[in-house]
Length: 303
Image (cartoon, rainbow, N blue to C red; front, side, top):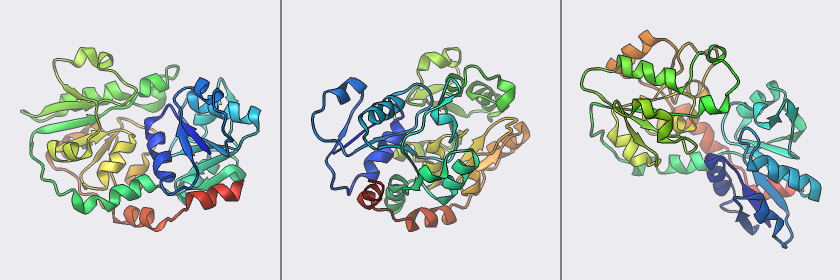
């Protein structure tokens, strides 16, 4: 039996797709106390890698005590080491699954132990790619901008803005400042964010919480985010997705994959609000499709 759970909704989705063809019985948990009640034999514990003191780390700690193999999934290409640190101490599971060879190289570069890292592919993105031809959409609203938010200020409460160069508020302020006349702005909230966080913007923007790819693709003429995985998903379907990180001192992997146009300057933002970019996602799509990993074979290999 496989038990899985995470405080990161994206990781839960990734795990579910990873296990789609698995023959193991599986069960999702939302609280660690639910794990204590299980009496069945557990073969593996699989978590995401949510930052901080999270359910993910509770599951790993429980598995260590019970001597059950623990696996943490990193479903994107950033913050590898940071995910396993609490109060300057590192808490690694038995194994770490990453989506491709590039992610593995980045993880090792950040200091993750190479012997723990295995490639698990990305069946979630592969499924989106298969649906691509079915998503025949036409952009209906020519003067709508969508800003895809992230809880950067919550995840980095003790780090000054100067260290990153930006946060979600600074990015939103610059979009509001530079949007063309007549354009409306909507904020797509992250699952861990509330409207209350953006209370001072309530008269300037609208908000959506549900991630509905079809509606987002056709209802917003311009889509801007920062580092969100959602940018990659949208970039599989459209070639004009923008990653804006004002004065950033790091890079966003979406640009490397041809899924986003990465910009750091306000002047660049003004230009792209007038003339949208043309990205090329073909190489990334080919890479995702060509990575074929069987979940059960991978799990049995580490057992």
